[in-house]
Length: 540
Ligand SMILES: *[C@@H]1O[C@H](CO)[C@@H](O)[C@H](O)[C@H]1NC(C)=O
Ligand SMILES: *[C@@H]1O[C@H](CO)[C@@H](O)[C@H](O)[C@H]1NC(C)=O
Ligand SMILES: *[C@@H]1O[C@H](CO)[C@@H](O)[C@H](O)[C@H]1NC(C)=O
Ligand SMILES: *[C@@H]1O[C@H](CO)[C@@H](O)[C@H](O)[C@H]1NC(C)=O
Ligand SMILES: *[C@@H]1O[C@H](CO)[C@@H](O)[C@H](O)[C@H]1NC(C)=O
Ligand SMILES: *[C@@H]1O[C@H](CO)[C@@H](O)[C@H](O)[C@H]1NC(C)=O
Ligand SMILES: *[C@@H]1O[C@H](CO)[C@@H](O)[C@H](O)[C@H]1NC(C)=O
Ligand SMILES: *[C@@H]1O[C@H](CO)[C@@H](O)[C@H](O)[C@H]1NC(C)=O
Ligand SMILES: *[C@@H]1O[C@H](CO)[C@@H](O)[C@H](O)[C@H]1NC(C)=O
Ligand SMILES: *[C@@H]1O[C@H](CO)[C@@H](O)[C@H](O)[C@H]1NC(C)=O
Ligand SMILES: *[C@@H]1O[C@H](CO)[C@@H](O)[C@H](O)[C@H]1NC(C)=O
Ligand SMILES: *[C@@H]1O[C@H](CO)[C@@H](O)[C@H](O)[C@H]1NC(C)=O
Ligand SMILES: [Fe+2]
Image 1 (cartoon, helix red, strand yellow):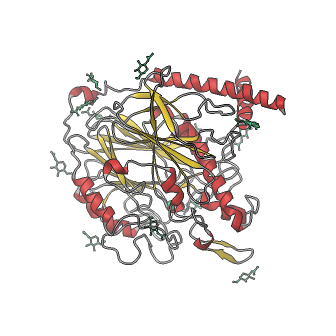
Image 2 (cartoon, helix red, strand yellow):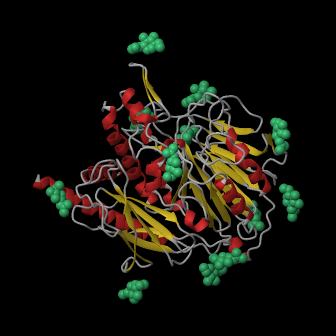
Image 3 (cartoon, helix red, strand yellow):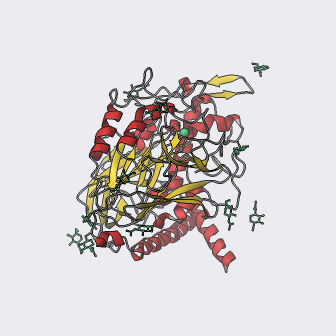
């Protein structure tokens, strides 16, 4: 029985593979690929997707009834120098909060297209809705498979384990959105992977094609998650440019710098074009810094890559301790005026109504605290932002960049809060850079007093569960088998202002029966793909 099911799956996926292999150009250049969602306020949703040709009027058709997708919204199709694809962005407004919608985009159901059935999204929970919910967080997540993390790459993954992308896809109905605060795809590893002979050698001037192939492979691989759940992103160092802050080929003694990056592959250009975060709704700047409410939580994305501003001299970006490999030579930003990010963050935090959103969670790519003092810690970030986190009683700060998992204590100026997780007066810091990419995990260096649990042997993602206005649980989910390796719950004495109905969570929307409806529609798309592929094979 089991092997029969596997055979059918294998046939279906090989048939599908002839239509749309991640990273490969589809038969039809307007085929919608890489569907992704982003919250745009409680009554909005941005739907984005990519095509290999520009389309004239990108359109999303949507509705609460899958038989009747007559409502529509239109947007723009954008590209940039050296990109192989166009990003199509459509912001839908006037939606009902916390409601399930079905949607399709332009050219869905086109001849030769493999994307056929409607996807779904659920709009944001209203500010002040105390219904419990769960969020997934992954940082430092790169291409999986033959062009990225595999059983033969530098940081090997066990062949029978699920990758983090597969694990997130499996649990996709279990979280409201996926947050990815930086290091997205690791396309800037194209040269390193060639030098390691992991990828075939392509001359440096043609390298932009390999860079693009890696980017598109990653975005294609993420579609089973990002087509269904908002994918909220922030900037990481690997989005900055194409050269991974300098790459040396020891066989030839050639050192490559940012100078090899052609136009379109510097200064966060791809990242700026590919995503549309709700900065307009929150007064932020592009995908670099912004905030949004979801139920009882105010979520804040900051940029640790540029625009640190406040109190810093010299370049407006992190330079870390001397010799910090990662942070030199980025040659990017700024994206705001001096201190703009700092001033925005102060205003944003000051204006939070804690009776409506008792929780404040901040994510930034680089860690403020980590068992990795020489390399990854962003000292400039502490200078720039920690006083605001303390002043405004931020509850949780998430980061990655250093590639392991470390749950720290709540920390004030380098010292663990004496209350630990029992109503601390300082933010809780969790570092989870263990989502996985070509290079694998990093060494743990030292054991700071504030460190509570640290591991660098298992890939995984973070699951945040907001139970109510006083309790928040963080789980480290091992991607390989879904096991929770570490769990901890924070208690805060927040003032709870919701009526009982919200607290008990009886008003949760998005019933699971609606989701299974979309799952069966996807199954029919696989079937259609099999039929279409068979027709194509016969034709060949
Ligand atoms: C469909 O695919 C076939 C085979 O690759 C191709 O020849 C044809 O041009 C495609 N049709 C369209 C409308 O893209
Ligand atoms: C389809 O949806 C539109 C917009 O919501 C509505 O006006 C129309 O009555 C619906 N049609 C049917 C047949 O349900
Ligand atoms: C409770 O939740 C509903 C939405 O489900 C919201 O309209 C209402 O404002 C919430 N009440 C409070 C006090 O936050
Ligand atoms: C993977 O699973 C197969 C089938 O159970 C087993 O034969 C094989 O040894 C496993 N490989 C590894 C590396 O664990
Ligand atoms: C590279 O440089 C090192 C010293 O800098 C030298 O020992 C080595 O021979 C050089 N290798 C090549 C291939 O030039
Ligand atoms: C990066 O782009 C921003 C926005 O266009 C620009 O202001 C800044 O000068 C650029 N930085 C570099 C190093 O090119
Ligand atoms: C932070 O700690 C350092 C010592 O580690 C101390 O010199 C400094 O005054 C402290 N700053 C604040 C604001 O408490
Ligand atoms: C909540 O805890 C803080 C310490 O974190 C304390 O200063 C405050 O007085 C407490 N508030 C209430 C209402 O108990
Ligand atoms: C994990 O950290 C330990 C201690 O630094 C180190 O010996 C080991 O090599 C690290 N593992 C990986 C995969 O980096
Ligand atoms: C809040 O959630 C926690 C964890 O589930 C639970 O122990 C606690 O009783 C809840 N508090 C209220 C007031 O429901
Ligand atoms: C699941 O994976 C974790 C991490 O690799 C491992 O420690 C654990 O033994 C596995 N559990 C099962 C039931 O295989
Ligand atoms: C659930 O929320 C809706 C608004 O979203 C409201 O009309 C309804 O009364 C709420 N039900 C309960 C039990 O609170
Ligand atoms: Fe990073």
